[in-house]
Image (tube, rainbow, N blue to C red; front, side):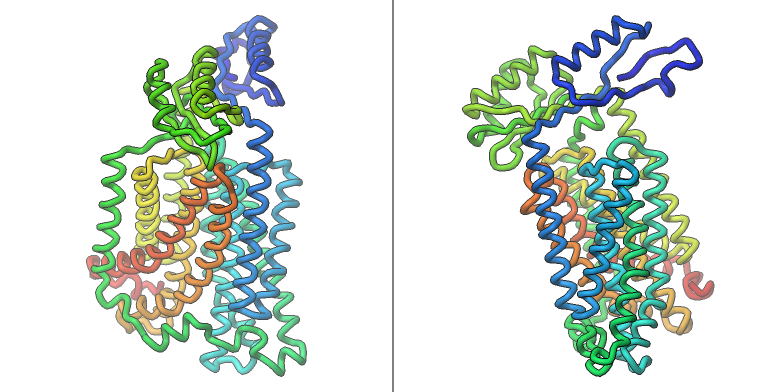
Length: 535
């Protein structure tokens, strides 16, 4: 609820207050009347109202829980198969991460919403990524015979991977902090959960995994059989890359042409079909129904147009459900929408009702855009300071590339860009930045060792060395996201779809967009900034 003016100095602060609780529609209307006619000498306007029926809430919780359990279990199995004993210990550390994150959220009294779940999923991916980075660096050390034992190789792996882990987590923490302080609503919830998850993932990877792994490799049975550790092998991906030795950066402009063509395709979807903003950003009413039988959205849309609601947007929701998005409705218009849906579906139950006033929608949209822009700017400044402007700019270009493509895919599919989509977009940006940071951290390391080598050859070598980590991390995240898509139900469908598309695009762009952009920027400047300033 929002007041228009308070004359005293100790009135409602910041122009707004919030009343929460379990209210029915009639109780909410009565509360509004009591406030208008009671002790507050100000007009009161409802700017946001959300009602989630118990059926939808219980189904969403159950589906989310099952999807998270199954996805995390599949990820754990994958890590154990690839990294053997180290994978088992990383799984134990991942469970510790989950307990620490849950305890922190419980201590803060935070409510886990869908955007919060997005931050949790991203933090799981970062926890897995940190372990994979360490294990792959340890494999490199052992395979090159620079370390005589798996224990020394593991210690070198933690030491060499630390800078990449630190940079990727710092950039994510910068974004999480700015989103919390500058944004509101679902974006702020994403920032809170992501910040807690990042700190917990750092603890699990750099403390729990390290203590367990160093203890295990020091035991006599493991010391005598190094193959058990998973470090004494190069892995299938690295073996294939070493055997074929592809020169991916031999012609970087062909990858840039492919990225440009993809951007044109995504941009045409935005231009031709337009972006359908959800009620969070435009204001309006969203009604969701669980129907007795599947209903044709086109028939419902036509019936609502005949009933005087031509701007209603009707979409299928799950196997037997419908969502109706409209402008703000009166009680009679709401009753008419419910009657139309029930008549055409043979019965329906309203399971969700959201009302966002236009002023709040504009505020949420403006706050989200400002927070996102400032977060990206802060990440660019940090990356430019750590990697110089050529590599930092290339990372941000790849990030923008992923964001445009994801928005274009949703435009072509006619899906709404709402708070759920924004949470998914922020998660995709996090994955993209982490991948680019890992690649450019390796470029920086190789340049320091051999500054006389042409940058194109250095980047090509860095891509091949980091590709096993990129593939294994992507596979681990894909298991969780696929479980969310298949088991998460209608409430998580669009969210999981956005994350899967973003994961595929982000994995591609971090290698075949960011690296070619860096080479092109370095070639055009002709300053050799990356090499001469000892990146």
